[in-house]
Image (tube, rainbow, N blue to C red; front, side, top):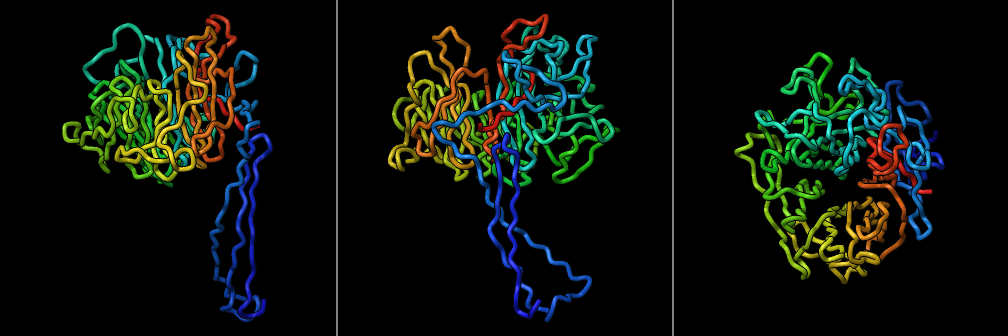
Length: 458
């Protein structure tokens, strides 16, 4: 190669059509110039970082999501017989009242409801919460017990692997509350809470360890979920940045260590791009903002969240806020059941002109009528807003997904779903927990599926 010349390189990577995703690159110049002729020293190695640009499948009025019929571990199926990809812990045999089943199946515990979902963009770990009436589930809070009835659990699964056991018994990304360490307070048994916990993962930072769960039984404390310090098969711990081949760890209530506290029980929780943690409370009709500590400390010494918005019907107030999401730029979007609208805020609780071409702070929910209720809300990286709702006045238990453009204008509706909660990754792939029929002998026809279902744009 002549002196003072160079080469240009372009790289592209593509997913299959079923996944509806591809990435491409800009051209980059690899400057040579230092050597006359193509004969650099034998130990000269040039490393080039190629900037990649995502090429996502377009969202348009005719777009629809479809369940992918991909076999990953054990399956559960919806009412139409379509497999739901199970990343709940497929392949891990666990014992419930002496009956060993796979978590990917409808297991021997009576799963009652699903809670919330969250995703971490670096590891593609998915956090989720759910409820069971399995009597063997212990209380996560030492010195307390849960009376007969529902127990609420949290856990983690990997969307990259099938969570099969590996590495000396550790499972890729697999976590259920109470089962982090073989020698911990709970003796390896699952534990739960008396009310629903919530999980919130950082969907904006790279290799971020700003991932949390809310402990509802210890005073609304925010505790850490640690992706980089994980338990080993011998009961010890190891540290490996970004090692997704192991289970994450977490700070259990028995540690009495947390990073902050909220004033009321949140109904939705998120990690903001600034690193702050935001919560909405439907019952109190408030928005709270917490600056979490960098490292866990004694529960008695943690900071308390600041209330930045309170109940009302005017712009800047909220009524029964149940959905909470953030754009990549840090604008908060709140879905209000009481006001039937979306409302935008900055991190300090000031209304922001996000909608209608940057002229409006609120946007009406599409065809909102009495009896409708928002179940979940999320925003993908391009700013499209996903709102999941149900019509409580209807005899149908089906849910509806409405997708809004980044300016709040309505784009499309996909009705008659069995989805109860959802999250969306950087590829616009959708992950859900459902309430569809199980078609399993011995179980009533309409119960939540104990599986995470993978959807792609068709």
